[in-house]
Length: 431
Ligand SMILES: Nc1ncnc2c1ncn2[C@@H]1O[C@H](COP(=O)(O)OP(=O)(O)OP(=O)(O)O)[C@@H](O)[C@H]1O
Ligand SMILES: [Mg+2]
Image 1 (cartoon, protein in one colour):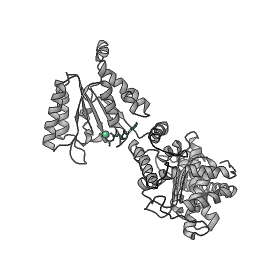
Image 2 (tube, protein in one colour):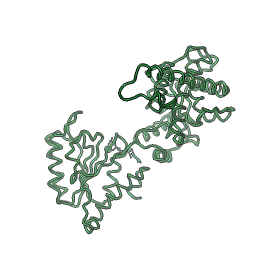
Image 3 (spheres, protein in one colour):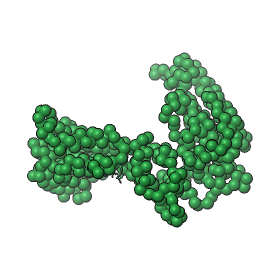
Image 4 (cartoon, protein in one colour):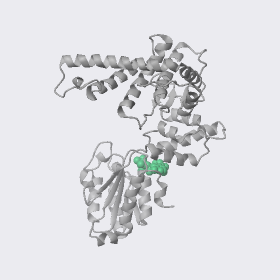
């Protein structure tokens, strides 16, 4: 197995790392061409995205001896350590100096670009500039580092490592799932949707945590429910599934039923307009509010305008459902209304979907323009609200089935929503 095979996904970064490693393995090929290979590489990004994994793959692939520096000594001793490690690397050249978490070399949370540690690293890099010593560094916060350290001839290559998305996230999840006993209902795409934007370390921890829930239940396999329980507990800080708080809709009190229909309303509208767009529905809240939440994943293939409309109508679906079931009173409705108004305002004044005459100009709008904009915005919100109600009344079977399942289970994953959608008759509506 090649060192880079341990890095799942991230194909363009891997390609760049392979090229850098090649300059270390075959320096003469570059010297012959008269070109100067990079002297150093900084991998930066939020914690847990695989920077250290990538750095160690470069070291391993290059076959060079590595000298590692990590801030694990008091200040004065650490400065001495920096000098001694650079000296050893130069004596053993060709070699790699690996500065792990370089932005932690100086003390404190503030920016200290002129800290003794950075000044020392910089002068040490300059001292070894005629030796075959490559500097490989990782950092979370690049702004903490002095610019001079990152200039040409020092650590002159930079790669930003972002949390995995789309295919990368799916590949990483599939990799972690493969090594554990997961049930067939665990759908990598749904997990990737739910975990969109999370780091690799979070993905790994979550998947392992799901296994712990399964183990505690003495289950044969890890199911989507175990995964959702782990997700709710660790990411959303919400009570986990298994702590039996669900109820039959008919037995539940009105407050709980309102929350249930509100969340089911969001989900039905979104799923009718864009099947598969709901990643989870929860009616337990996350500690900060007592209602529920519904998590959407936009359809990347749809146009920007369609996605925006989908989001707005989906947002209004909660209020539309509670209005339909309980009259005007609703739960968590004002926040949804603010969201809908803000999104519609954006479409009207910036994207000019109702005409250029409503465009806000940068020198300030006249009172007349502002009042015209407000009128159009509220009538657009009304129009989208009517659409949400139309979708719900045409799909009342789906709404009732979803609400009943949600009330009982308190949490539905994308897989649960899909099963319910497939057994109901869905009437699509153009928007
Ligand atoms: N692309 C990937 N493929 C497989 N595993 C990965 C990937 N990226 C990260 N991991 C795993 O995630 C965990 C965290 O990775 P790593 O320690 O390299 O992150 P980091 O970016 O250096 O974090 P920090 O900023 O906290 O030092 C490790 O267990 C690592 O093996
Ligand atoms: Mg690291």
